[in-house]
Length: 356
Ligand code: SF4
Ligand code: SF4
Image 1 (cartoon, helix red, strand yellow):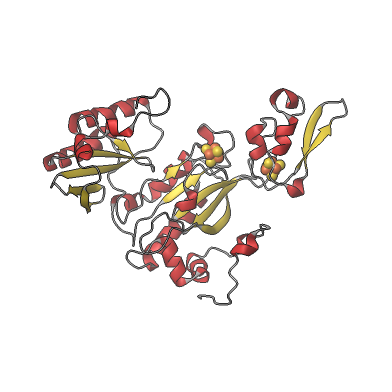
Image 2: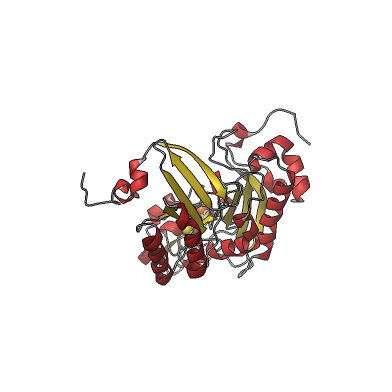
């Protein structure tokens, strides 16, 4: 049915071979990192070439990508939710020339399938959003430069998904990734702009935005209506700044990054699971974030060395136990790892059994 709002029906843009075989794909295999082969019940074959993209793309790069899709794929391509570009061809003889064209024209790597790290899904960061506690593309670029070999070669026990969200709003896929990098504020909004408060913000909505009731009405000595924060109640979520631009929360020393591990969406072998805290806070150190890069690389390498084939990061930790995870990675276990949320009792493990 035609509609004048929202995106067009996705079926209108499917490549012919996918339209024809919709719901009839029999199996697929990974020929090599970044090259998938799907076979349908009718015997049709589709080759997919997965390419890492930097997510933020110049218009010229988008034009180059589209030119390649026009030349090899009848004008079709798709972006995965992790910012990979996928080019699809039915003719096996086009696979190699297509990969060469991608290398020559775009300079992007082919990989990210199977037992590789896929592209890192990430958020807006300092380039666009107003509440980040860290950058997104900058951190991700620094990490993937270091972990490049794990994108182009199958060197891991199982697939490894990394994501980054630059604040606790978590527009990235932290909750369902093997390694999640989250921007953390650790100071309350401290520079409340009393001069502009009533021009930019409404007091009732600002008060209502705070989940911990940390914001109170305040009148300045010269009679200006504004607000103040009860600092011991603030949990640095930044929600007030989302509704009131007069309460910026970003802080050059207080902002940094936390790392979570062990999440996944997959139902294979074990059910989906949320990740848990590994590193509570690592300082921002742009432009290359060396501390964050080495913390992520350390987790990847320890996992690669100790997990069994087919074992996702969280499954490996479940098998060996969290004390072993902290011992092998050398990450200190501190009071920050103990959940002190008022409802945390419901999730505490109450058994005395520990895997050491
Ligand atoms: Fe903005 Fe937070 Fe989303 Fe990053 S995670 S894009 S800072 S809302
Ligand atoms: Fe409340 Fe969050 Fe703002 Fe702190 S940062 S005052 S907890 S809304």
